[in-house]
Amino acid sequence: MKRVGLTYDLKTDYEFREGDPPDANAEFDHPSTIDVLVGAIESQGYKVEKIGNVSSLLERMNNLDVDIVFNISEGTEGRNRESQVPMLLEMSGIPYVGADALTLGLTLDKVMAKKIFQADGIPTPNSIEIKDASSMLETGRLRFPLIVKPRFEGSSKGLSESSRVETPEELKKQAEYILNAYHQPALVEEFVAGQEFTVAIVGNDPVEVMPAVQVQIDGKVKLNDKFYTFSSIASDRIEYICPARISLELEKTLGELALKTYLAVDCRDFGRVDFRVDPEGRPYVLEINPLPSLSTADVFPLVAEAGGISYEQIVGNILRAALKRYGLE
Image (cartoon, rainbow, N blue to C red; front, side, top):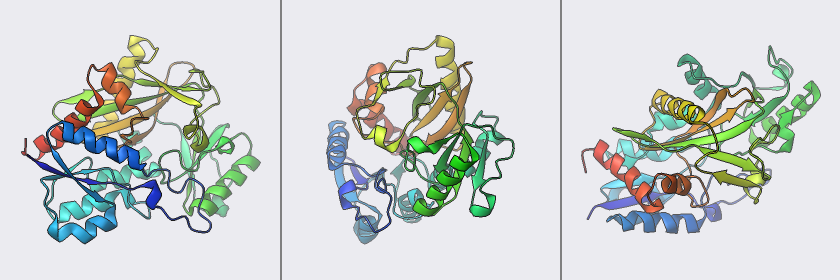
């Protein structure tokens, strides 16, 4: 029986510091998510050893007795935090599930990711970066309304109802908030009104594009000016619909673009691509997450069901894709 190490970060382990924004631990998992994931892996015929976060991994590196590590750790500080666990494992020659350090670093940094999208002809909203107060009002050719995000955060961190701005004054205020609260540049994008979707992908060779998931906010799929915020995710305002209530043509387009994005950043084993689709039916890639949540409250259980398999089976498929990649399956 193969032994699988599990690296992760718990919300309960995070100690808030003075000045931290309220969503500082948003990317971390609930203990219940880890318990469910352990059960799913073991149901597929593997033995799980809980390792924990990157600090716990460092302490145990010399005595780690596993065949592969299933990594869902977000890391600790900085824009390279998601790369910390993969880099340690790579240096020690220990196989692991998921994207490597380079892919994780590039995709967490929204500015760098968008450069790759643009180079590969992947449609993504026009944007600028605000690094400091001196560049605050240099919006170039961007058209209002705009949306203001932290440059290297995930899980809708830094997003609130105030993130969508319609005037230079609102932009200045929101960019200052990102610069001061998150201590990083702000990414400013043209806001795409319309609908929102996410597409999960599993595997390498072959790659399986899962059915598109449609995002519903406050009971509506035509979101117009609504969008994901930290507070809405933590409430019951958001629902996921799978299969999405869309045309076969749009489903096909989203799947093809998701796969192109997955391959463009060298994603592997599993990932998720987020889209907005404007009222004319034009899709735009917002971001790719090569370290997506496997919480049962997120999209993977839904896409598994739509694909005719269980949550446990889709987790097993992710793990087996990694084992196959290393020649261990």
